[in-house]
Image (spheres, helix red, strand yellow):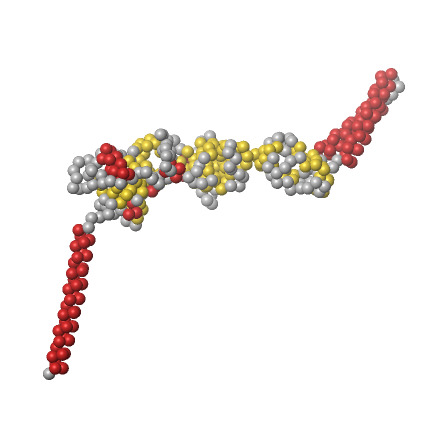
Length: 402
């Protein structure tokens, strides 16, 4: 009997404990549900920009190679021993300046003999001419004297040319490269002594699709740079190949650009943008404000909460931004984020053209949208704007136009 009562006691105890656990779990789930149901959505701090029509500079982007306007590997024209080197690496040399002198002792000796022969034959011609005038000499003798003088003069000019070939001159002014020969070295004709490049103005060779050919013209302005967002060098198109490559369907173009800062070097990879006529009234936004997803491209716009009536004014936005900077809650209407699907167009300089979906006057989120969802409460803080260069975000920096 005692065993039966003990069993019943333990059975009742287990049922009570199991029932308590079930009740506790149900109560916990209910309280958690009520907590999240009554909890407000977190406020997200964002940066914004007001949509305004602006001037847009369209262009044609390409990839090119930088070349010197004039560039050559300077070589000696004769063989001999290097006697003098008149330059150092990276010197600025003048056009027709002496670069290298080879040993010319033998040629200098031949020059003395050639000049003596010219003097001798000149005197012989004068005597023959005098005798011919007096009737003591024949015409053939006078002709032989003239021929001898011509041969001597020819030999003199030949020796002078041989001496001149012992000297290597700069064909044009520019920057000379690393010396590739040494004093006392024996060199043969064609031996390269250094590279010479005119770096004051550079050429850029690039190609564009054949569909863009009708928009190109000689003298058209271009901008190039070593980074796609740093096109600092300006120039003009100087040549357009009349033939289109049938394999690639590209047309070759050449332009000249200034290189006053000496940043461009022959052989460098360059980003090229051909400037087209300015277009007015284009709506463009920073690329940071546009979100691309599998179901469309969209931006977040700032709106008043549905509970608040009236239009969102610039004064309301200014007060909300000032309150955020002061770390206070704004007294005005509650601001929320709304999703606007857009159609994008061209891109340049960190901006993207908005073809449709956004109207002038809209306040668009430019940073912080990765934490947003439709209806999220927002706080505006434009002290940091990723759409501006880093330097303008520094404390005390002024934006353009200030």
